[in-house]
Length: 68
Length: 355
Image 1: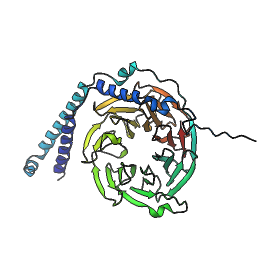
Image 2: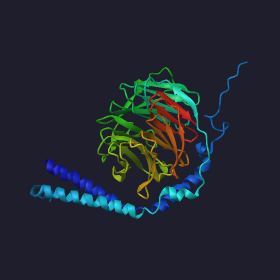
Image 3: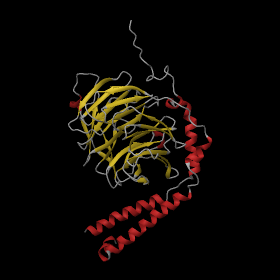
Image 4: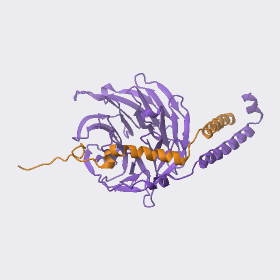
């Protein structure tokens, strides 16, 4: 009994591998160029990258305590 | 047909299948290698290096009585939900550091929590093997625990949970080795995802523009990308040398990063179907527990078990900065929805907002 369930499990593994082996892939050079392009296009809208000033970043607003 | 094969020579069929599986694995590696014409950091050599930037702790959220295990941002970019080993789930206003809600779970080690897209509910779970949803009431005196709804049931601990694009569905991952998609209203399981060979520790939903997929990572060192509608594993990646603690999609949806106990973070491109970068240094020997990208995807923040947060230049592969502050392991880290800040949670019982 355990023999046949091992076979069922292995058949699933083989099926999955066949599926994964056959997918379409692109070259790393192309994929990398697109990742880079996305970064560049969005760089100015990235507050942690550009270092948004206190006036526009709510977390950077410093509360100043003054003794009167 | 099947029964004839099994009863005649079962061991031969198993051997044939094993051989075929080895052949296919080799073929998979060969196909991937054919397209490996360049490294990501080589492509990135021509772009400008990042300048110095200052990121500091801007808020410290104190209130948990024990290790913070998980946190999530509300879409309003100011509220945060966090969960702890002490069984408490707290909703904070990160601007003021005020606690807005607190729930005591019936179990300790609440390893997962998530904010609903509407901002009106939170989901959490852990050693109770369940994922429960608590609607958040505007009435501070109302007992949130009374309105609790049990949604997901696993056969081992809940490691991560996340609402899909609405309050109506939740995706969960578990120590039982599976992930599952649930309908919140009925508690019914809509789809289950089998394929990991050990505990699944983390998951992340693809950005909505890229369709119905999610990525999961586990103790089997594998990261799997799943089709949410069919339950099928579409792609899998096995290059880490230890448990994968955290996975996060690149903002475009074309890649994802992972953080692992092998002390590295890695970037996997989905269209090239391979690992395209490793973020590591000989001096970093403790596991990475959690990772997230900045808004443009240029920076990768990694929280580590050596109490630090390392900031990596995703394209060039270099470390930009080390952030000190936590007094114990960093266990969870997420960038806010508009990228203005990120929050880290730690075994030192606090959360910190960095900007």
